[in-house]
Length: 141
Ligand code: DQA
Image (cartoon, rainbow, N blue to C red):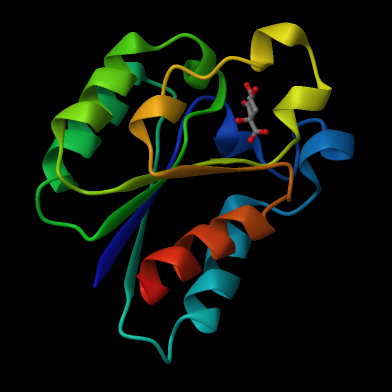
């Protein structure tokens, strides 16, 4: 089973960026932990990060008809991108939306997600653990 984690805008800065909100672990380090956690399971984990909306679209199109699942934290594009919502709506792979922080406890502009209605579900506010829970969901599906 192939699962792709996609991180969008500014998530390359995890570990350095606002650690009181996002923690102090880089995604590269966390990805190693994730790979170990799922090593015994029949799952190939892949990771892609981009700050560019078009590159996120291209990656979703690339794997969206062959992978078994996509875990997507689109960062701020969550709250702005109809194009990302359309991309998710146009593929066959199920997408789980993840946010590290509890966006509902933050500024009101973070309360709306264009992508949520196109996703099978959303995991919000559980820190990096949200990615693990999303992968677990695909494994048990
Ligand atoms: C985020 C929440 C977004 O509102 C924000 O723009 C991010 C990170 C999160 O993981 O909590 O960049 O997606």
